Amino acid sequence: MKRILCAVLIASLPFGSVLAQSPKEKSAKVTLVYQHEVPNIPGKSVKGVLVEYGPGGYSSGHTHAKSAFIYATVLEGSIRSQINDGPVTVYKAGQNFSEQPGDRHRVSANGSKTKPAKLLAVFVVDTNETELTTPFGD
Image (cartoon, rainbow, N blue to C red):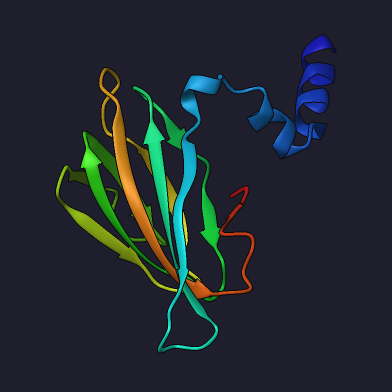
């Protein structure tokens, strides 16, 4: 009976609460490092986002702003990434990948459990987009 009660209690927790309790060193540090309107494309901006992972760090599965095209370059270490239902791929420093509008970024994690990793994600996005990343729970 205790097992069933525990299972029911755990299943009833909101997904966000479970994520909020995960250790901080596992979460990515995300910093907007620049943003500029594109002068020859009205309504579009370029935003640079630095994503830093500690050893073993990761981000939850997520999507990006509906208008966002993203070009990411690994600056340090290695990054494990899966877009939509594609293969999980490891990118090393100097390598890059892109995401199309509407893609689901299922895996985004440091490829190492002992060394940090960094990537720069360059967004081309509608200027009025304020939420660049939205977690999902599948």
